[in-house]
Image (cartoon, rainbow, N blue to C red; front, side):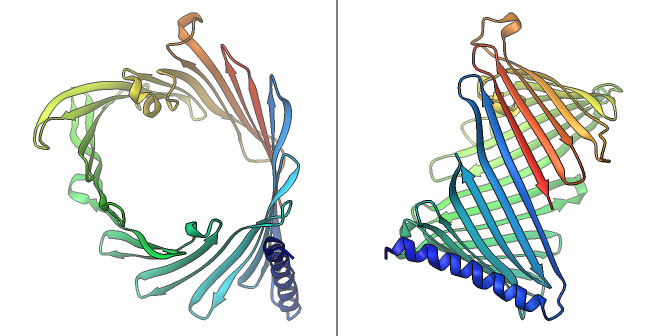
Length: 377
């Protein structure tokens, strides 16, 4: 028997043993519950017609504090992914393990085992991951916690085939209460580059509460790498208007030859949202720099977006939602450089059934409709 076949059979045996063990435990009077998710995505295009891809089924059996899971995925009608796993406490340890393989080819995908535990205010975890090729397998150790107002997380990753050091990171964030802002720092070290990078950020620092009727704020990101030092401040101006109060003018301070010098200030975008009611709003985005399109409009190929979003009552308690947006670019001959129209709607059909539809209409291309059905039990 081939090694891949043996691994697949081992995975099936693990699933059967986990199911039998949980059934035996439930027979002793422990509380038991069965839950799951069925999710199907249907993509319809002008050229390819209707494609059902993928279909996902997740089932979880909980017995007391222990759970057993089975995840199934079908892509293009092929049964290409099966993952079985179990999790639960063992004394002070929280353990989890799962095996994944491809039933259609009887090939092994991965095996992951993890454990977590806490000592005082510190949380420790270890993840052991085996996959193909073996050179991609690793073991990762992590610790996280808080010291006063400072939250931190440190981790190290080691290759296991062959045994080798890969990388480490140490990240922390803390509030600067005097200035009502947040600071964060992250150091990354790798075997190949030594100190890979050091990032220091400050979020939404208030320069002026009200200057000419406008709040002036700034985000600052300082990045050190072996090859360069990057200073990326972003200015935000928020007019205190009764209408479109979320309007922002986005700018950037260009660093000079040294970190202490400034070569210029550039305005690269306009962004805002105007609320008509609690459930209906108009949003706009205008990029003045092609390299900033993605951060301003959400799509790198378009310099302008105008859209409307909102919600509506449904038959089942929770509200549905919708979004319609128009995107403008430089490559279209259409009126006002219109290149793309998108729309989406989310409708709860019941307490457990949801449907989401997203459609794209490129002016010079093929339309696409993606429908996602989900059922939770």
